[in-house]
Length: 103
Image 1 (cartoon, helix red, strand yellow):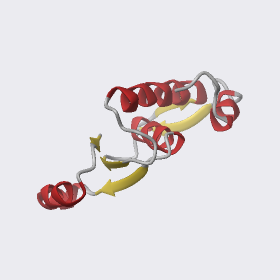
Image 2 (tube, one colour):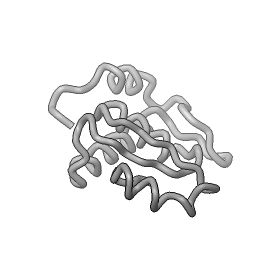
Image 3 (tube, helix red, strand yellow):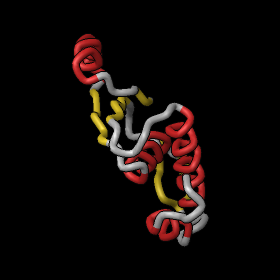
Image 4 (cartoon, one colour):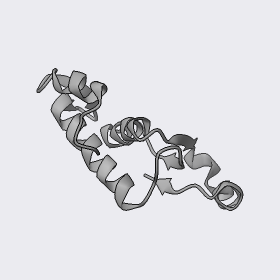
């Protein structure tokens, strides 16, 4: 991510160690969530997923997936949510739209 921080990250970081998400009896703080968002932003950059690009995502409602969604929002990506039940048809989606996949 660029040197300047997005207002949303500033706002979330302001909540610090307070619980942001609870997943499988484990609390994730706002700081943990923001750290995961930063990791995903670096990964999007590493994979050359540019702003405005399409990103297909399949996953559960884990904090890691939530962080990826926030990172995609900050990166101005178009997110295509995929359900595991439709896995057999993903090759068609990938062939037609050619989005990078994230999990």
